[in-house]
Amino acid sequence: MEDESMLIMLIQQYSSKFGITFSSKAMEDEDTKQKAMLLMMQAISGQRGPVTDEDLEL
Image (tube, rainbow, N blue to C red; front, side):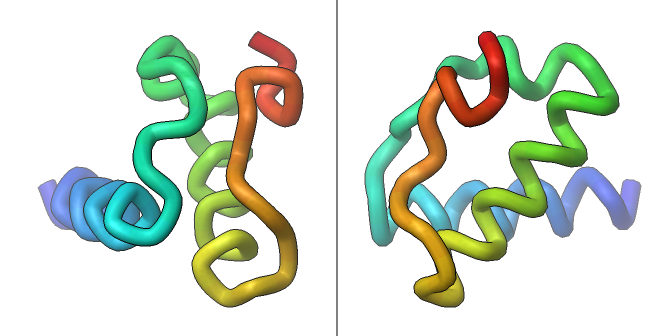
């Protein structure tokens, strides 16, 4: 449950800055979800731009 609440907070923070920029399909596969979380953290910290479906190979 703790992981889920962290994911929700991360998505809220990301979407407030960039909006929703990638498909919700990313959250269906565990590997893709982990990659999405890493890319969202990088985007929030200014290390990269918004995350796209192409970044996640969707």
